[in-house]
Length: 212
Image (cartoon, rainbow, N blue to C red):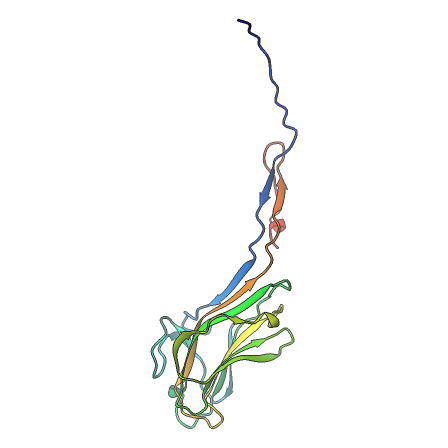
């Protein structure tokens, strides 16, 4: 039986490379109106009358309630003899220029006395133009809007707005409400980032390099 001894030296001259998956190709902005006051960075505007949007409850006048808190305009509580038109405006969202798709969805309710009351969904583009997307005028218990395509209005200062109007003659109506807003944006998947480790198997990366 023949035997031998040998010394084997392993030479590792190639530093390992770690590939970090690219950022996901989707992002969502949400507002559930769960608080007892207007959410941070949101604003309300009273264009006619003195009543404003209220927060901290899901109770609708003369309607089934929302399942959770909502932004509600209570025209019934505003009283008779008022002509009301109030707007609820979101902060600006920076939508990437390479967005592939963008939709908005929300839950809403509208109760009318049939005198021209309306609940509106609007968008505001980078130029500050206010565009009506959906104007609802039929009695509706709390319901999901479904996904509404708003890609054509994407910008670095995209905003949404909701409105309630009790009609040109100022009907003493019931009111409207909205909650669970979701703005969904689809963007291209970003390519992976490759990081080469040092000889000791470690690497130091400035935190700023990991932030887009």
